[in-house]
Length: 89
Length: 333
Ligand SMILES: [Zn+2]
Image (cartoon, rainbow over all chains, first blue to last red):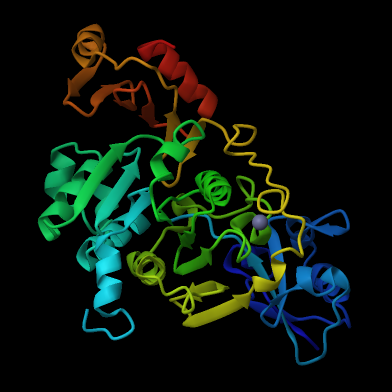
């Protein structure tokens, strides 16, 4: 099962976990499975069916926007990372 | 100079180059320190703020005397930088960077460095850099985590290619809710500084092409591949050349300040405020004192810091509307 890396600000909405395994053969399926397990996450990641514009998703280290977006295929050994923009400084 | 990749020629180029550091807080002081010591010939430091005691935890150029002297950050940083390296020229600009002044602040610079703490100013820097075709380096830090990316307009994705929109308030931690660790800031600013040295010395080959993401507490270091986004995403900024921040369509002029329980009201007037006159008006309502750079006025649980251009930082509230009312009440509009 692919592993999803959850960023610090979203961990409180994912049972405090920094990662979770979720079933699926595409990024979209994996994130749907994740947000079924943690419904609180849904509105923080998605606006309707689309990812929110300030949330970027990477498969391994590649941005899915230059792969196939939510249709990007993922294998069991892949890592899906949710990367929010870091604002402070 | 002994470092081979830099060499004498590289050092000569550093001495002949100009940078603008936007923001002189946590990231900005580390950047200013490194670049002054590296011998960058002309450094312009721009910041809107004054120094407070809680800044000293991470803003490495400042000390308790600067707090006692009520110095603006840009001015205090410039004094330290001149003391560190008398052979360079340092220019302090005390102003709020906005769409009316950014082009003037960066037009003559070879490179723009991000020492800010907010995405609004970063998108504005990004607009100016893309419009002028100037390199700039983004850095952001919260808690023990940070990100940085080097942007060469036209050659690498810009900030808006990678971060299409900034997180809305409440959706993201701020310095106030999550804190920020000095070493994390130093790390990100040092990454920015080394990239700056490469650019200014002319070594574009060795630059970072990724979005770097570090978490120092958990020892993670990631290089996220973003180079492929250039031309792939329909970026409003670098592809369509719509400069929403630079042209004033995006971005407010009144902002809550990260981690400070304070609001900044950025009205700008053409004529300079007469502090003596204003002080006379406010005496009796609360305590008031002023120097050349600012007027400080305290009343009823609120502290106003007023700058000569009419801009004010009002402490004791996070509520923009309330702050505007207070501004109008005590300072007039
Ligand atoms: Zn772009």
